[in-house]
Length: 226
Image 1 (tube, one colour):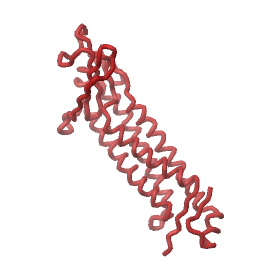
Image 2: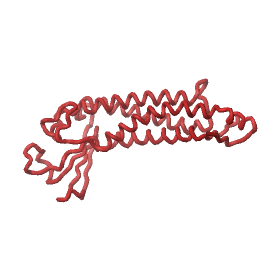
Image 3: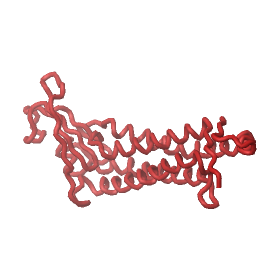
């Protein structure tokens, strides 16, 4: 069977966006910048004693980093470590579930990213449209990301988070910490996943357009469209 390379603006945009969302989720999952503490000062009696003056801690689902800062808060060194050795070692059980949920979402998005590249040449998976299957999977991934982003603040009341963010930290209360860029990037990836699910239908429509079918009948390869 002849493989026609079908490139339209909508299929190409959907493919690039699907890959970008997948990479964004992977980056945020591996990042420590979900919660960021204010600079530690020795005069703050509630701050952990193991940190040096002006240290800033960045806390992720399973990675913690300490940034050593100069007096003017310019970073001079960084040290990171993976702290949980098992599910019970996570800062909160909610974070363990959120990590699993986000990992499943990332796996699904990685599969769809491969499908989006294959869609340039193949328009079906068995008897199903590769676009509709991909859109359905991206919708599921988006829901998994919603679960992760809801469970993340539910774990702020754990003892390990309180150790860094102060005793006033509670579920959905950050205490002295603030949200890092990873949370906002994951929020954007969640929205992007749902947008991709919608765009998959637009990509399917463009790949099945009359112009594309006519170009295939005329023997053109690659086939370009809108």
